Length: 116
Picture 1 (cartoon, rainbow, N blue to C red):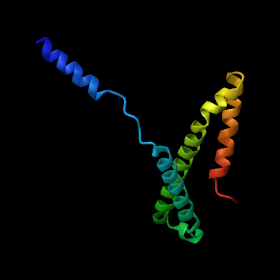
Picture 2 (picture 1 turned 45 degrees about the horizontal axis):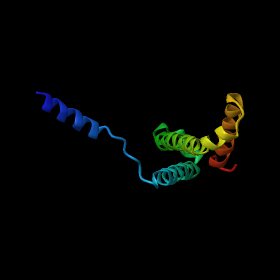
Picture 3 (picture 1 turned 30 degrees about the vertical axis):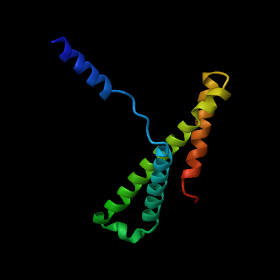
Picture 4 (picture 1 turned 90 degrees about the vertical axis):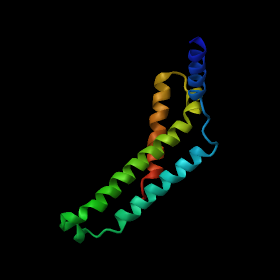
């Protein structure tokens, strides 16, 4: 009975061992989020206000808004997270780290938002 338990523990340990993500995962994710954000912006820019009178035409702009907002928020979060270690080393205390993080969130959000 103990060999079966040992085998099970070994299998479980092997199955739950950490796996490193691919090296280019962050770059691929960022590129995908950028593309989704740009596609959503293009979709919203192509809509005419006169077509919005009919509620049946609201699905695509609402979907584009949701996709764009979600992808843009994820993109900002990803970029801010990438700089976390550098901000933490530059910060003198927790309050300074929070201030720097909020500043970076604002800067990244301005980069992601369309120029108007």
